[in-house]
Amino acid sequence: MISPSRRRTMTSQGTDRRQFLMTDNNFVDWKGNAFAVIERPRWSFRNMFRSSVPAIRVLAPEGSLLFQMPQQRTRDIDLLPVEDASGNRITALRRTGRKGLTTNLFQVVDPNDEPFGTIQGDFTYTSFKVIDSNGTPIGHISEGSGMTTIQSPDDSERWRYSLMALAIAAEIAAELQALRSH
Image 1: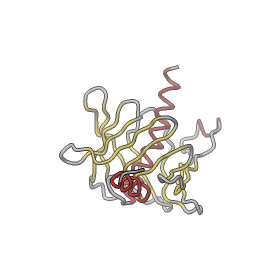
Image 2 (image 1 turned 90 degrees about the vertical axis):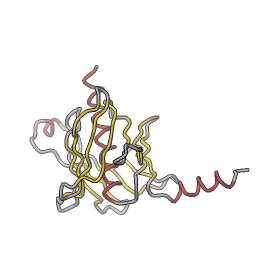
Image 3 (image 1 turned 180 degrees about the vertical axis):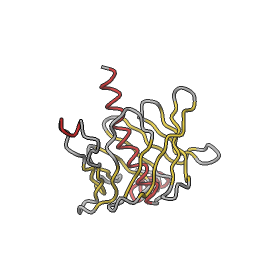
């Protein structure tokens, strides 16, 4: 028998849109329902030498565009704009520095370049913490066992889309790091 407190946790996790997973090319809720599909540009030798590469698009299940972001082409994430279908910026992540040798620091900004959050990430791009102004963790991205767990600080599009875009870019950056080390 499941205790009432555990049942509440399970129920809230199932209905809480702040907690979700990235697996393969989908974002899914805790019940396994896909609420977004990642559409990645096809890889080709031609794209490898082009100055502009098609954007990564994240679509709702019915096909409408939720947001788009540039294709990650380097091992480091320095600037990550997240845009709507018209190319207007919804949010952006900007690497602001490092904390020691092992932590990347990112500032999350709105379309007017006003900061609304900070993210700390490890140098392998497999773990990130969203922190408040007091340094308290209020969200995260964690990669492991073929899927990525995401917890957004709130249910706003700007936080959800920022963390979804960062999870996609981090996956690509980690793959590029792994290729370089071989």
